[in-house]
Length: 169
Image (cartoon, rainbow, N blue to C red; front, top):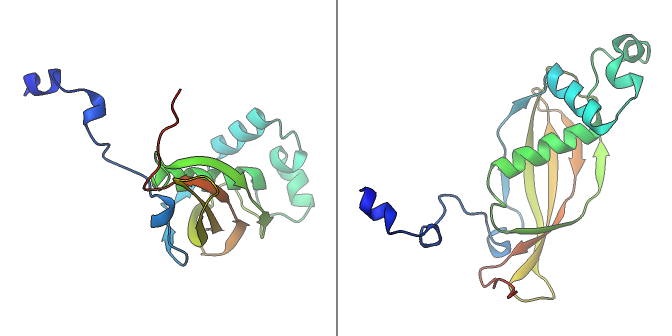
């Protein structure tokens, strides 16, 4: 067995997981990501890393005075978690080329302890102006543990096609 691996180059072995090409991302197709519970450590790390020094996110009494029932999660963090959950499905593994545009709306508060997942619905999939590439638009609905929509975003991505050719250097 060792002899087989010694004489094999990595480029000769297909990856176990390959993302979808733009042609495979058919309009009307939908998938659901795994779930993830947002922890206090997640919140502290994100607001520290991102410089979100807004009392709404680190002062529970300030948030309570504003009518909130717990430690609030910034909308930017909800988006990042959802995008991470999408990437963890491997739908874009090796096929994503660029993130081109998005619109985003926060629908309701998310708190420490909430469990999030995303529903991803392909809205449009079309060839780009360059061969071997396509533009895919999706509608992403981020949901909490009660299946309430908490955030919506519409990513537009440049995705490799089935006939994609690597650029020569």
